[in-house]
Length: 603
Image (tube, rainbow, N blue to C red):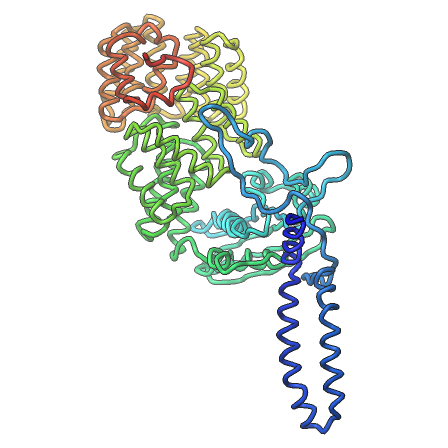
């Protein structure tokens, strides 16, 4: 009974019956007070005022019935639709734990259809909306990424309105440049409404055109063209979001309005640098990332309070060594500073928590705290691909392959996978092949397909070389590494693997020459674990440990944790220097994070 009463009261609130009652009562009281004096002034009989007051009383229940039954929209008056069961606001939550996986992985991050069993059409939430990528109608070079900025900021603003169900960025980005009908897109995303638009930024002016479409009827609920100064782009984004929310009859609290109208930065130049830097990051190509970091650092130099730019630096620095196997100058200091400052400015930034997690394990060796930071990032950004990739990498590095694959599956189900995620999926199978769980040809075929799709992506070529080497195909691996180094001549992992393969095939002079490459680069940027691969393969175990220990002591290697996973190194797993190395990387209780694959700590 209590549940029914609560539901009824909630429905009254949703249909704005309370608002109508309060407004009607206020007007009625005012009229009741004013009418007698007004009628006396014109000499009207006393009963006339009594008739007006009686009509006001009779009209009160009529107004409430109309408030329940219909609503006023930009299209006019229409019947209020009942709320579909199961479609209250329910933010995504849940994350896999060290012991398993919760319900977050039982379903995909797909369309927001109404739940239920049996046949029949699925009904989308009447306040569901997808923000499609805004088209770029031409822009000066300085502002060429503004269409992405408008898309993401409008989507972020709408996501703050609790009454709305907003499809995630990961789900809508695949529709960039599509000519698919709006009705089909809405059906695939499980939404009733679609917001689309365009951006043109030239000189000191920006024109934003936006339109909200009811996909069921292919009719416009709202449309507007904004022609403003370029500095007003933030106000335009906020106005679009607020207009869409009101067109969908969503109540906006004072806090929500404040958040919607909060600009990411006060400086449009800093904003342009941020957008360009993040666009370079999205390529996941090492060649563009140094410039991307410079762009973002330029943004925070202009506006030190630009939280998203600080978080962007943390994000770039987090992934930089994973792709390049090089460390930028003052890597850990910069990573800590960016993540800490971003969290000071915005504790709800998932990207900042991701950067903090990377700092905690790579520099502080606080693996348990790092796992908590990854969980916090996921709690805040459950659909963000970089967060999902970060969690997959963390589990993969620890030998928790099953959990890593589940995170990759969640990313794939979001509809926006990434090259790096596909590489990790294949390389996990390389390790599984080492443990006799799958055939070595399986990951090779996966990487063949990736190489066909991305022939100029050095990361794909390097990891295909790893798969070939593990299958004993050293010459094929060398050929692949030569191709990778032509694309990315400074890739430290490629140099280390090439020296390793040369040593395995008995070409020691060439292997030593490859080792010389490491001596000729900045010792602060070299990944010492990559260098150690060469002497280990050549049988110079002490030299290999010298380099590995130096990397652990200088926190200058992200490759070292993987030594415990590679079966080829199993003869070294009981060596005293190997055990000391493991203690340096996972001190004390931090070994609790380690998974079942590879070397295991002693009791």
